[in-house]
Length: 535
Image 1 (cartoon, rainbow, N blue to C red):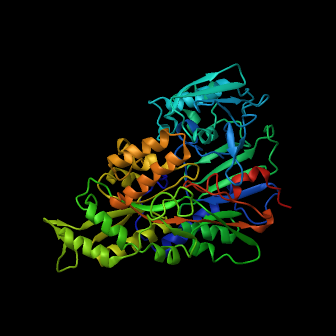
Image 2 (cartoon, one colour):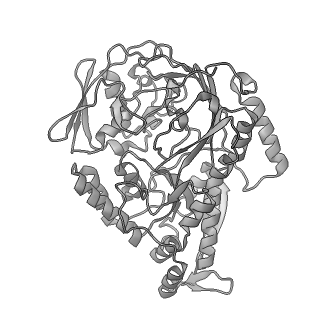
Image 3 (tube, helix red, strand yellow):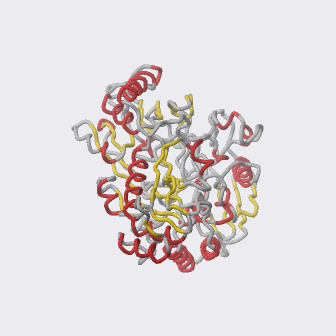
């Protein structure tokens, strides 16, 4: 549902002097080789600024689960329009008539970067390890349909499913790990989690936690050696610092919030907007006497001004969100849009017995309509959304106390405190609705952060997952979206377009429709292995 990032406790606001010191330190030590990167660096080198740092680089623990991980390849991958195409497989899978058997034929002559050959054994090992309950992979449920995986020789793999899982081919983008390395150590804590070996276009050279990931091109890549020989992903969690480093020439490209991206209007940079399924949402945990009240939830859903958030916070680079499915998706249920109606919201709470006190805050049966809302330190978009939400709630008579913190601070509080979270996956509605809403996943890491519990939704989620019929699946997800109107365990705010600013000397670039987990493998550098070197 969201990404673990900054591990340092940070106050809501810092002084100008502290910010200046942070910028100076960042620009002096984070360039490759320890020096300061500048425009005009060696041909074939790229430095990009990203906001999020992974916990692990092991696909067995969830890294790269939506494909495009650079270090690894999946059996399949996505093209620019998110269509599936072969990667380690020679073709799209052969699917049995009943939809329960998927056969993949594998490329021959592919090797991991340690020189060992890639075979069907590695595919079986990867999927079986992810399915093992002792493996710390929060996305395991996406492979629930898999009954067994069978290797037929070195170059054929057959997946046998328990039921016809419609989006299974999308899970064939999962990165394949080497059995001869990852299988010889503790899957959760072994060295492979930070020093991975794959078949991908790039090899990891160094991971300086909290600072940068440095890669070099794989000269023996089966798809052809990348022309960009050195790739550095600088981890810059503060939006303002990232913009400053890009402006100074320390970065060649970066992801930026709209208000910072629009400042780059000179001839040397280009701005790319990537459509996404990425949403911002407020969790309303059932364990809190205020946020667990259905009337409070419904009232907040009506009181929030989503259109104003898109206009003022995103500078138009996004759209209102009424659930995990964007309004322009074919899976969106028409009629589930919620108009901004503060008067109806107030009437709803009046009728429910939530009355305003002298301070303007409502209460009911001795419970004051007040709750904390946490957001991730340094994330300006989340901060802005949290403050706007609190402002709309205050007009309704609900007090929202906005607080910043790291995930180490926030996560233990999630069962009772609201969180300004993010999520979204464009591949299939099962991928983010199931983990977001399934009651049995409440409290499982960042799955179902609100501890949402709705039997009708649980039943619909299972039907959508297990049916191979498109119309039946649409009806199931229609049910989910309508139930979220009746009992919104989350207040969905906006779907966000991701904005990237990149030096023009890399030529015209492209983007894909992106998931929530942006920056590391998404952005204009989703196909950096195909870029031409700087001249």
